[in-house]
Length: 220
Image: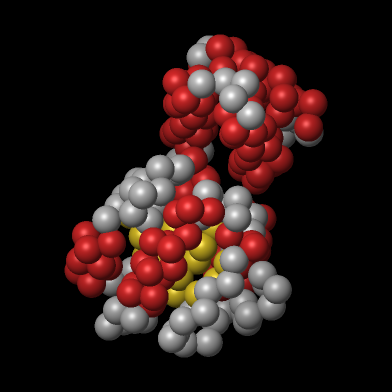
């Protein structure tokens, strides 16, 4: 869907929310969350990020496109509200201190909701001290964070080390553009820290977990 992502990026950069919705409806033949998020929106936002990195668009342009993408996701999720009962599993999602990218986290939150998890989405750039307080208070089964830019990695690694060692030892999932290229060496239980390279892998992991199956090879 490379051509579609380039065309959609131009619409996002124009700031036209309704045209974005119309183009997506024309492009996708079925109402599939992973197809929309993984195959269309993700490459669109990656392309926009590259345009920014090459100084072909401004920060304001990138923010406008992100806001339109955010609108598309929110509109889709509003129309896809599930009536399935919650399964009592809890996930907390946020960007580590300094990490401003959040679209991927919002998509991941939607995938967790698809499997009836109770979700707390705390947005981008959450200071570690406040993240630790929130984790200790709510005790999520899973913490999900993102890694988009390399210079945010030291704070991300510090966050993973601190939060992995909170009292109830939650599973920590790391996603984002550069996460697959990073090693997280720290004192943590085996398989407690999982690098999740794509939303499809997350979907597969949650599907296996929902069936009580072994998840250790899902992201290998």
